[in-house]
Amino acid sequence: MNETQRKTLDEALETLPLVAILRGITPEEVEDVCDALVGAGFRMIEIPLNSPRPWESIERAVAHCPASVLIGAGTVLEAADAERLERLGAPLMVTPNTDPEVVRAGADHGLAPMIGCMTPSEALAAARSGARALKLFPAARLGTGYFKDINAILPGSLPVLAVGGIERSNMAEWHAVGVRGFGFGSNLYKPGRDAADIAEIAADLVAEWRRLEGGEG
Image (cartoon, rainbow, N blue to C red; front, side, top):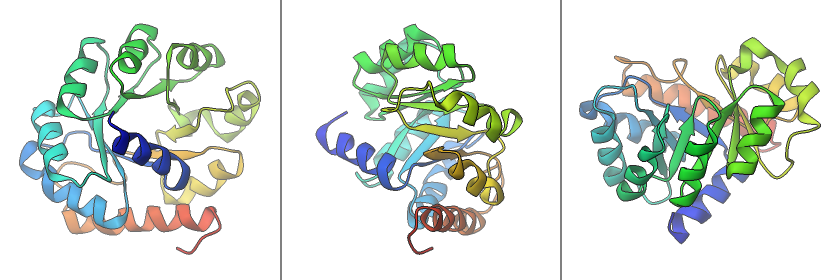
């Protein structure tokens, strides 16, 4: 990450830690969808690598979005992908699991590894390997009670984002137990959804986060 991206990441994780997960997006629609998300206030956009032609979508998104928006890859399973993300100027590296080799590769290439974990052992391994944030997944199936139980031993310096089954209606219950951000998948974007609808959903999610933080929606 360059210094601008580093500051953007710090600000996003502090003030609006919401990640848009664009699973299934194509290069042909990525610019319109990014415009909808950025217009609503999103500053972190993830393009999973099991989407059609994901690297082309990532490259287009990086070129199209303003410097205040961070682009990256999700479903990162191979350490070699870290170098490619660095070359594209896409600093977000989001994984569904905790693989220390992949985490270290992301950190070594100056990326922001957001690492999927479910157990305390996985979370602590991710932290030791250089994670920038932890992704509790699958959050809705695990439940807020589970997170509350394990949160006491998680590294306080790493924000935890709840991902999987998160939507506007259940953000408050997760926020109440200490989750510091969210990733939104098919409730926000799914293939074929109109950009105007995405913009409306995204704006509702941003407004709810600001309400929970004590600001205006």
